[in-house]
Image (cartoon, rainbow, N blue to C red; front, side):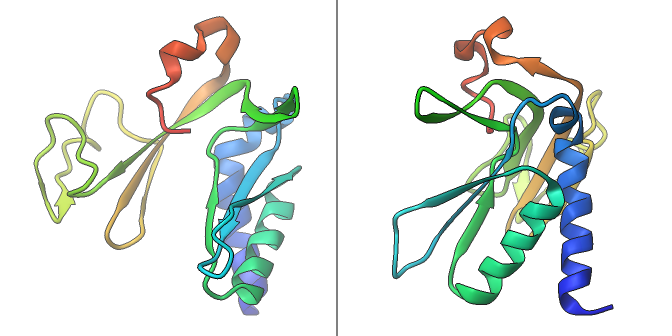
Length: 156
């Protein structure tokens, strides 16, 4: 399998696992952000599908070799000219020495206590220095129903 095909397949699968419930219900789009050291202003793309996002991420990696590329873990909408979150479908935590979770001892990487907690993550992504923990909610939750102030602490 070619590099591009493998990347798109793996990235699409990963993004589907996070976004499918929200995308199926029309709760927003996938936001991809990127910036380079040459152009520190962050650019944002709102994309309709995991496949479209994977294609754009692959092209960014190829054409902007020094780009930092991120995606928002919850779907985005444009409201009053601003990009915002209307539904939370995934909760995310980054864990390392700089971002420890309360009550978790860390020596380079976190112990398995988070994975064996009463609410184990849906999946964990190891990117070397950091571990990204993701919890997919069974159903997306409306920010308006819960109140933005109650979810501000969640990394979205």
